Structure formats: C-alpha cells, structure tokens
Length: 282
Image 1 (cartoon, rainbow, N blue to C red):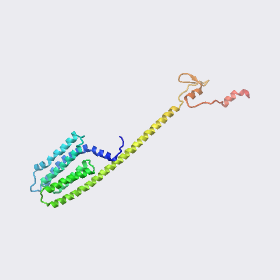
Image 2: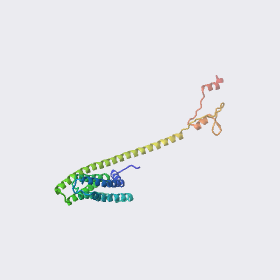
Image 3: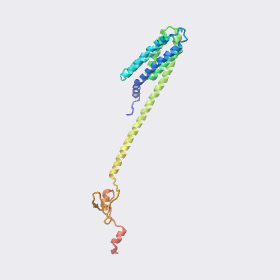
Image 4: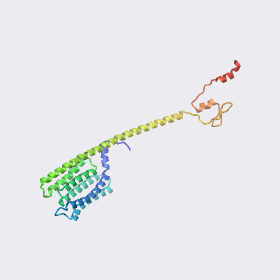
C-alpha cells in the first residue's frame, strides 16, 4: 500500500469510506430504537389519567420504522451513489422529527424521558454519521430547530417561556456533546496524521532495505566471480607431480593451480633440493 500524503484529503476519504457501513448500522439501531421507544412510552403513560392505548403508541412510533428500512434498502442496493450521505442525513432528520412529534401527540412533551430521548438522538446520529465538525453543527441545529418549532406550535400546560428555558438547557447540553465530538474528531485526525508519518517512515526503511539488499547481492555476485577456490580430491602423479584435470589431461601443478585459483607462482629452490643438485660442486 502506498504511503498517505495529505492528512486533510485522506481524512475526508476516510470519512467518505465509512458511509455505507455506518449508515446500515444506524438504520438497525433506529429500528431497535423505535421498539424501545414504544416500551418507554407505555411505561411513562401509565400514570396519566388519559393514558393512550398500546395500539395508539404503536401507531405513533412504528410508522417511523419505514424510514430506516428505506435507508437500509438504499445502502444495500445503491452503495456507490453520490447521494448516499444526503439521503441518510435526510432520513435521520425525518426519523428524529417524527419521533419528537410522537412525544407531543402522546402528551409526553416536556417530560424527562423526552429530553433524554432528544439528547440520545443527537448522540446516536453524531456517533454513526461520519461527518466533520460543520456537518455535526448543522445536524444538531436541525434537530434542535425541529424540537423548538414543535414546542412553540403545540399548546401545553406549561407556559411557553418555561418550555423555551428548558429547551435552552437542553441545547446547552447538546453543545457540550458537540465539543466532545469535536475533540473525538481531532483525535481521529491526529491519529490519521500519525499513521501517515509512520507509513512514510516504514516506506523509507523498506526502500533502504531493498537498496542495501541489492547492493549486498551485487557485491556477493562480484566476489563469487572474482574468487576461485580449489576443493575436493586432486589426482596428482606421485613421480612428476602433474595434476589430472576434469577432462583427463595432465598438467603441471603450477599451471593447474594458477588456472583454478588466484594464486601465481615464482620459481625458487628449497635447501634440500639445492644440496642434492649442487652437491657435486662442493
């Protein structure tokens, strides 16, 4: 794999590559989330004198199951479409707004369970959707705008001013979440930059290793070509000291050694031979 070069473009490509897997996971969580919301709605409306029937709760919640099913269908059949991020974000917003509408319709607006659910919507969307900081800000702003709009439009027992103050507190909490997600994104970016630096270092080391190996192999081949080594048993004549080569020819020992090694000869005479040769001259 080639080393990475540009941290910003690489990080953008990294986020883009996660849309398919993350969108499918988000859709599955949304389906499970609708079933969990039905359970919590039924529990928290039991103390209400005009508690809605379970069928009514199902009707307000399960209708939004269509959205994650559509999302899974798009991801499965059109994973390469350039419109995938926009489609998934739109489906996510409609799912959040639709389930917010259910709280108002079921008489659970302004309750703790609604506040927790809205915060959970933001956390879940920000966790699964591979967005940059600007995208997260826009996503949170859209969810919050839908919540505030329904809160203003829907008539409730509590005064509007109190409801808006509650919304302000919830938005402040969401802003803290946004800061945490920004730190997470920064950590991801720094981790990717560190990985790139490590890959560059490894690539340099690998290139250096290849050059060193090639140089060593060249030197070994050169040495093998230059070096001649005598080994094994040499048939040598016991009288004239000639050596028989592989072709069966007999050659003087100095000629054979010179041909099969880097050694060369210079003739001289040993003391014993000198005595024998020149004994008559004494």
